[in-house]
Image (cartoon, helix red, strand yellow):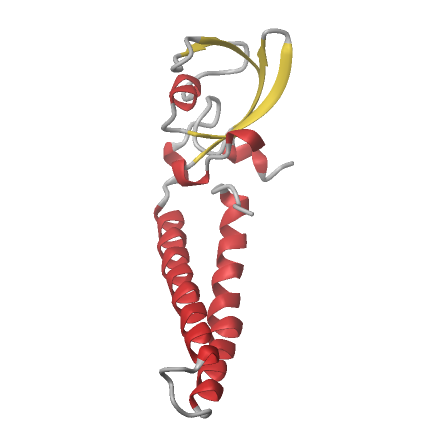
Length: 160
């Protein structure tokens, strides 16, 4: 399951990185060594499976390192404290229905879970807005009229 890239998600990424580096990586190396001891590597299914697992784990470690470094470079002072921006959670009303959206990085977007990219048309329409604002978000199916009922910024989320 993907973790939204907010401050809450940063700790989860750091923990996953630690787990993969200190626990999974050594286990896979041991499995490769064990499989290697069985002889001919050309027809050694255990060896090839362990090498494949190693490639996946190393790719994920690389991606996690990049993401963690990006988080560390993020300047929270540039994110407004009173307007919607990255990490904000908004309660929205559309056509009489209320729902909650969270503004996240594009790679963490999952509209079915209410995680909306700040770079998407809806995300761009919401960024910089306040509780009480009404916005029309352009979409391929036409404009969506949204009313912001409640805004909790990334600065406030630690208080929840």
